[in-house]
Amino acid sequence: MKVSKQQLHQLIQQKIHAAGLSQEHAGIVADVLVHADARGIHSHGAVRVEYYSERISKGGTNNHPHFTFEKTGPCSAIFDGDNGAGHVAAKLSMDRAIEMAKENGVAVVGVRRIGHSGALSYFVQQAARAGMVGISLCQSDPMVVPYGGAEVYYGTNPIAFSAPGEGDELITFDMATTVQAWGKVLDARSRNAAIPDTWAVDAEGKHTTDPFAVSGLLPIAGPKGYGLMMMVDVLSGILLGLPFGKHVSSMYHDLSAGRELGQLHIVLNPGYFTNESAFRKNISQVMKELNAVKPAPGVSKVLYPGQNSHAREMESEKNGIEIVDDIYQYLISNAIYQRSYDHKDPFAS
Image 1 (cartoon, rainbow, N blue to C red):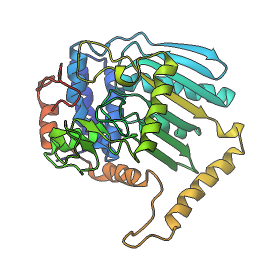
Image 2 (tube, helix red, strand yellow):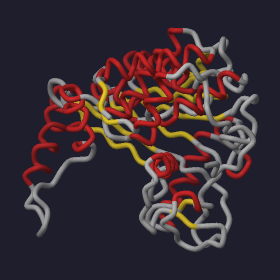
Image 3 (cartoon, rainbow, N blue to C red):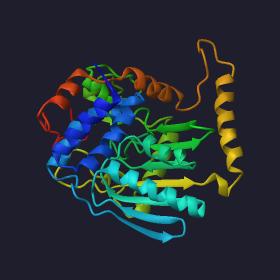
């Protein structure tokens, strides 16, 4: 069914607040989740609310975190999230990174000890809307088989990028280092839909189309994706003195314990490298020129990265956001959670 962005935001905020977060923090979580659903990234939207609510209600998300921000150099800092909601810590730390980049041209902010933070596109767009180039990457719990391996080691370890063009134009790219994010499998489960056989393997290491049989995800482009997820894990885990690789906490193992996850924001101020207005003009020119590239047979138009998601976001402003009926019924119910995700394996159904 379809609901307006405003209604979906209200429902998510109410549920997250009922689970235990303050209205302010619940509102930020809702901002990030509605952003994802509006852009068609339903794997990181309302489908996650029940899991977040259970973890919040059981104490695995700190309801009253003591955030700290320590500058370690002119362009570097550590934001400690005290195992609060990852969405909140990631947003507030990006705000600080933007301030640093405005002053010094570059900012690299490590975000330590947080929970799952949702769609990274939200945070890099914070930077782009401030006239900066934003890059963000984060680690996640082990659910990917390394290239050539038969058991999981790394997480989906996403990377996101956004840069400002002229006016309100932004170019944004957000990807998992797997063929698809785990949330896409969750979305398929919620719809009882099959998945492509290129996404994942079952317990025997065989490719599967059954989202309920998934035992490991596959890296994008084989060894290249494998290398990228290693890089993300180093920069958002080992670099920040956090658990890494197969030692990263499971999303479902113990919902009463903090996740201790890491994220890294990199913000660049174009004015410190080139003429700022020329930079924005050239970004917009790239977007137009990509659209003008001669399309291949069977393709109507070449799109720049993130263009489809942006179009869906604009459409959602007019016609609302499509969400699964079961999720809507949960959101309007009085239940904090209906299924227990606690102490299930990483591929809990």
